[in-house]
Image (cartoon, helix red, strand yellow):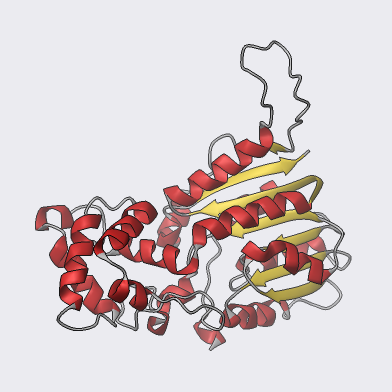
Length: 318
């Protein structure tokens, strides 16, 4: 199974530069994946450092354990791999019994191996069951249940809110109509319904016509946006003074949450804007390091097309 887990870390050099990892630091990779980022981070942490990797995908944890295990023991930091969702960050880090964290990395979205395995149901390019659960062992709601049981209004709301799909209402109507003929259980069935719902002129621009709807369903199945908010808030609480948090997002909804969260902790003053001095006493908790998101180079995009939409934002605990 692990030989299927091919993972090219996005914005790797930039993440390492901004996180400023040192020996003895405690680093948390909140989205471990295949440990592409963590392997290089581990080399900077050294034997006296601590690396905590979190993932809800058993396949990822197995692959990451094997990759990190290739490091010479003399150079390897203390490594603890935790099965779970970063939305439960407090519980996970309490179980690891660490006092604080010097650096967090969140690499959001679906990992390439998950996209590449048709049986996971994430891909609109390969046929498979309509699943889309990140953690099938704990989650019950699937994309199949959503498309076959939710009414047209709810389907339209989910697709529009989670992807900004302009044809959301029409796609929802087509889904409801087609499922009355037979259940929609496979990804290729849904792709054809989406193609039929979007006018031909609109399908010729903006990438694959099913991309936005599949993204919207994945976000809904996994509660990704609420999980992200909880995970970021918890990570900021756990950061040591001077510690940094780096987040790579892949679509505007995620990036907006990251940007707004950083801004909320960086500017906590509630005084009226016309007051010359702050009197509310609410001091900033974060300093925003990247005023604008860091983007991948053209060279990286050429080598890894899935990096195209990536945006990196970094903040530092005061």
